[in-house]
Amino acid sequence: MNNKVRELAREEVNGQYIYMERVRELLAAAGKTLYCYVETYGCQQNEADSEIIRGMAVEMGYALCDSADKADFIVLNTCAVRENAENRVFGNLGALSHLKRNKPDLIIALCGCMAAEEHVQEKVKKSFPHVALVVSSNALWQLPSLLYSVLLTGRRAFSETDAAGVIAEGLPKLRDRGVKGWLPIMYGCNNFCTYCIVPYVRGRERSRKKEDILADARAMLEEGYKDITLLGQNVNSYGKDETGKARFPELLREVAALPGDFRVRFMTSHPKDAGEELFSAMAESPKVAKHLHLPFQAGSDAVLKRMNRGYTAEHYLSLVRKARSLMPNLVLTSDVIVGFPGETEEDFQKTLDLIQEVRYDALFTFLYSPRKGTPAAKMEDVVPEEVKKERFARLLEIQNRISAEIHQSYVGKTVQVLVDGHAEGKEGYLSARTDGGRLVVFPGGDELIGRWVGVEVTDNTTWSLAGRLAAK
Ligand code: SAH
Ligand code: SF4
Ligand code: F3S
Image 1: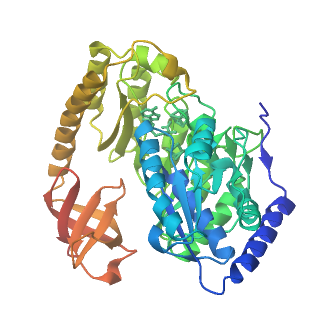
Image 2 (image 1 turned 90 degrees about the vertical axis):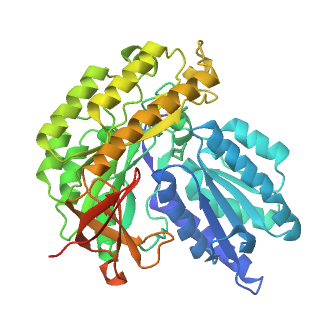
């Protein structure tokens, strides 16, 4: 395996601009507007990649649209992290075949993490003949040349599933105009947690240059973004791939020191590498949101060990104590997996104990899903499906109670929120988020979008808070 980070030479990226131009010329021959539709699954990394896909599509002459029915080029940007995510994509992909029958020139592309799995490429080759293009996340920069070859030859194109990966700077990017934006600082992952497919589909860890990240952050602030999330599978590893590069706490401080009225946050932080330096950088920078997403995955040391997580429950709890001592109002969220192979009732109880000790503001709970090619998929002592589900339900019940209690404690208080848009399905209402990402809905006018306001909380549900604009 080649561990060296390779940043693409400018000429290689420019080469793709030439293909974008060629595609544009081919499309112009149609003599009408052609539309591209991008559907994004999975995590924020994919959201960020979809901005590049849209940027390239527009550069290639497509107009963007928001339904598959209208599109001439459909891109599914997929996630491989759990089996049900993959099944959903295969289901949707199958359903697109009727569109292809009615519109033979339609190009359907499967991009993202699933596209890097060999068994997925095989399945598409055999069973989804209407899919013309399969492009893994690491090969996304080659989308224009691959699409060009499909358009020119009519033959299907499959990218390589190269695990090393590159850094491709300078590709076009089209962000949704909005208040919150994603900013990738690194790609890939080297941690190889035994359940996880990400290192296989996203390749080795590689960090972008600090200057490129700061330039992106400045551009986003100029475009009006008020809330920037620095993205990486383990941001604490930022810069470790090369000596002399800045490390994450330094990068965070520098982004937070940029001029402007904004917040910066980050995800994800791995407990084995997070520590005082990071928490101090958060605590000392007023523009860093006091929100930490620190996945714990399991409360039992035996399970953590089999997951190859590299910390114990006690170490995790000591981090939480440290972070909270430096940031008393810290909002803490986490990920947890239920039903990892060999998880006994006693192990699971330790997960429940940890949740009750930490009292997370929000928890993302996952049923363990075996992923082909990962070490955990070969482990014995598989937890029966009904036991998994029963544990999952117990965990949810406890977490819902904790979330409700935390929400209830907000009633009567005034919270500072950033207004990010209209509330879904509620005319005249706005949706806003606290520093920690808590959803607050209140009546208000469009002029407040993109601004920080105080909202007096009057009501709560398990998932959100409701209130009214506080008097100044
Ligand atoms: N890099 C991040 C997480 C990326 S995946 C981190 O380490 O925190 C997001 C979450 O999906 C993980 O935190 C984990 O809880 C969950 N997950 C990953 N693989 C899974 C699997 N095979 N089954 C169930 N959940 C999984
Ligand atoms: Fe997956 Fe672990 Fe890497 Fe997160 S740190 S992406 S869970 S291997
Ligand atoms: Fe899914 Fe890939 Fe993200 S597997 S969680 S989209 S890195």
